[in-house]
Length: 62
Image 1 (tube, rainbow, N blue to C red):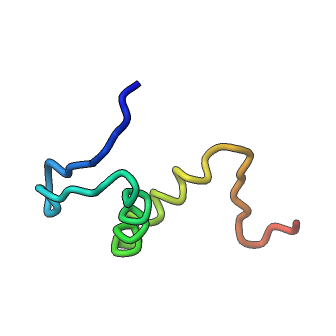
Image 2 (cartoon, rainbow, N blue to C red):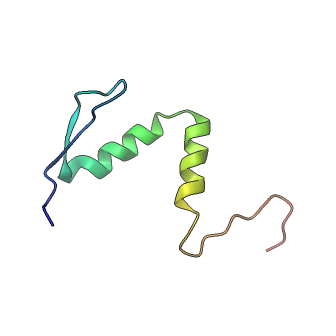
């Protein structure tokens, strides 16, 4: 498997942006902080959709 050195954004407002592999995680975190609430909600739903995570709804007694 080839090692990724850089990531290039090829669409959207960040088109032409290059991020080195060693900075890619931090860049992604910073970009997520700038997203709208709906996108953040979608991200949280994706992130916590596996690995034993389960959402606890308001009014639930733990």
